[in-house]
Length: 190
Image (cartoon, rainbow, N blue to C red; front, side, top):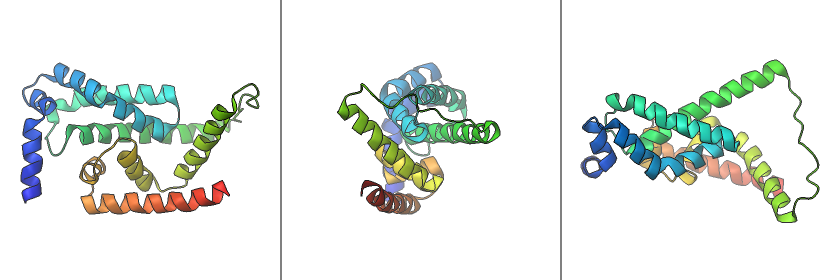
């Protein structure tokens, strides 16, 4: 009960939530872009793996948030609400991508052997590829929890709000995901 009172006190002090409640949606979305745009971009990039698609999805999330502000209930932080919107949009893009790839059976061309690139750039790309592959092996719910925690910087309570689960379940999902990532990456690094 004390946690709920504390959360509602934080909500009352949030200038973005105040703008939403007063109907100043344009100001609210501008504040959301300034304060939470980078976190949304990182989350989308982590989920989608493509910079252009991530930027587009982050912008779509802000537009969707603007459209949904009239029905905003204020149950949790604005950041968690925005991350929930971005997460759903990323999931839709991933579903569409998977369906399109299955239908077309496209052959992916890596675009060369990386000749001419400095060694550190090649190594970073190799590591990023390994981590992305490890993330792809996680259950979508666990992947979402770990990305919301470490890319978007949400608390476990906010992860629960974004995913529609309680805080304990959010902790458990993130813990399982990290354990699984460690296991997969241990085998990849060797």
